[in-house]
Amino acid sequence: MLKPKTIAQQSNLAKYSRSGEPQDLILSKPENVYQYRRLVFNVVLGILKQAYPIALKAIGHEKFSDLSNQFFKFYNCQSPQVWKLPLEFSNWFKAFSGKKDYPEYLSELLYFEWLEIQIHTQQNEDVSNFSVFNFNEQSNLKLNPYIFSILLGYPFHKTQKENWIQEKGQFPIIIYRDFNDHQVRFMAVSQFGFGIIGFIKSAEEINYKEFVEILKSQNPNIQFEILQNQVTTFLKELSQKGILFEIAN
Amino acid sequence: MIKGVGIGFRRDIADELIGMKNPVPNFIELAPENWIEMGGYWRAKLDEAAEIFSISSHGLSLSIGSPDPLDFDFLKKIKSFIKQYNIQIYSEHLSYSKCDNAHLYDLLPIPFTQDAVNHIVNRIKTVQDFLEMPLAIENVSYYTAVAAEMKEHEFISQIVEQSGCNLLLDVNNVFVNAFNHGYNAKDFINKLPLQKVSYIHMAGHEKIADNLIIDTHGQDIIPPVYELLQWVYPKLKKPPVLLERDFNFPQMDVLKTELNTLQSIIKNPN
Image (cartoon, rainbow over all chains, first blue to last red; front, side):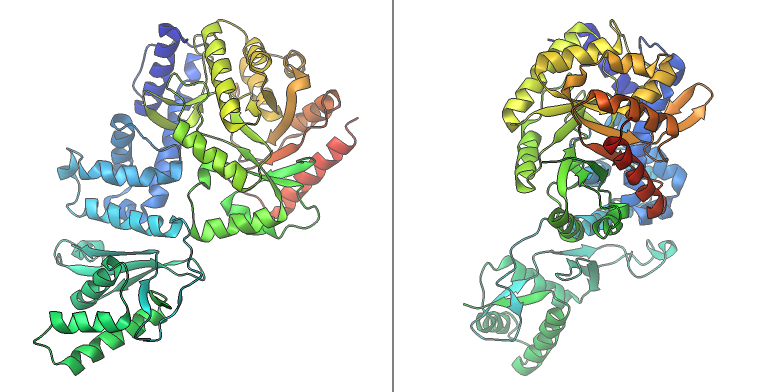
């Protein structure tokens, strides 16, 4: 069992490394203890800068570094895998009391940038029974499993940061990972397309025929041929981009 | 069985390593934390490498010297990963990287005290039982001792001998510590339980002041560190040797030269 003195020394070195603030430490070379603060914080700052290049550019190095410092000092990082740290940072910022000192879009921007990492690194799933979507009436519709749809409040993907607040609105986006080259891609969609993707995603099993029937019943005021044309065009685009597949029943 | 000279599998040089010829590394080493639960592009690269090379693993976050409890959820993932990739060596650092329920993502020095020895011995035994394989523990570089009550070599030796674990001898760390703390590297090595050395690390470092070297893994290995390996290797049971390079990657020719030098040393140590 560790003695209280040993635990206290370990805890104090950890506190110092997290905050840079002097602690009660018994050191053989006190002049070198700064190296621990420097090395530890550099790892954390490096990971966060790499994960959040847009946020870094938007708020500048000094503010980003200060924010990273507050995060690391006050928040207990939980994942033993450092590449998952940016998610903890994004979640921490959502509840951060000093959020008002940062741009109003930052919370959403951090989450948006994290999503790219999440989808890029998402664990592989078995897609061996997925085939190209061919509008077979009895085949089940299947979305690419590496997909996330988000309704952004700021046009991060469309304009420069100077316009983000001014052009605040609703921007439906699909983020997905290509099966073949594993790259993450973004697709801006209409509210209608966003709804369709959400619907397919939430349906455990639905074939193309059922899908069309449900759409028809949900949109009684739209002429069926027009609706079907719109849907067909959209589904074709999803299929071509590797977002929509089918599974034989 | 892992033998010969290997190299750290890092993303910056993943493609070069996968296609590497003359020399071909005998194995690759990776940090399981950086690959567990990762899919997509990097999983594909890892699988590609695993088709070619045997893999050894060198952990970062076990935090064997921590006052905090062991993380069995994490160990479970390590065990499963080791099994999935048929990994024969799992090594970790004799340090701590988690404290007060917070990960620090770097290696802090453990106080060289008897209670820390006892604490770590018990934890190593627990980890080895859980993983059903021996753990190799690495002597780490440190820039100041903290509340030390014994010498570094006594601390390491007691832990290795009492826990039954193996020793990962990081030759560069010995060199760095000998310089920073003013002791003789060979005398230090002679006091370690050399019969337990199952694995060796070789790396570069950076001298940032007249009296301070930082163990960076970002520079070439310097001649005195090669000489130390050449001196110690005949005393050992031909353990595998790993070239660690974590950033500031040079042209592959430089790494190839380092691999060749290491291979030549272990084939003809004297």
